[in-house]
Image (cartoon, rainbow, N blue to C red; front, side, top):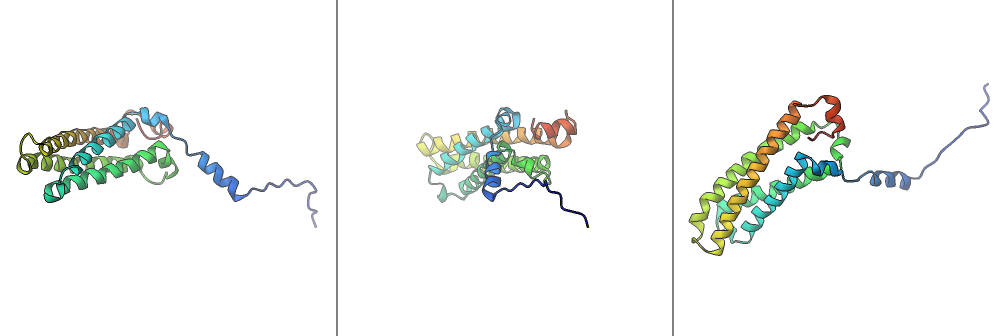
Length: 182
């Protein structure tokens, strides 16, 4: 029968120590904010906020067209916040089984299509729903303008997301090291 060695090193840890290490690992990646994808997401957040804030300050509930614009603007604004947080804290790297470039490309393409419909709806309804020169007219016209800018920002993001998904300009090693964004 073999004897148990006299010198055995053991190490114990409490659950509190393990949880503290996981929380400290959530540091923002400032390189993402400086990247093209991060800058476009920040632009989408700011312009999207302007769209729904301008519409929300008018009696939009009286006109179904503005209900659609509000739905698109608020939904995509919240979804963009989720993606921004995922990429800012590199949580997409922890969920490696999800094809993030594909998910982001589909999201950006869908957001572009939805904002095209919201921009057209908002622009077409400005003249019909308010008198020219009034505060509501100006707010709705401004919302249409910002909806157009957000639509363009999502379109540009869709283009760069498509390139990232297709792997243009990088190989597997550099895309993994860069965190999956340009």
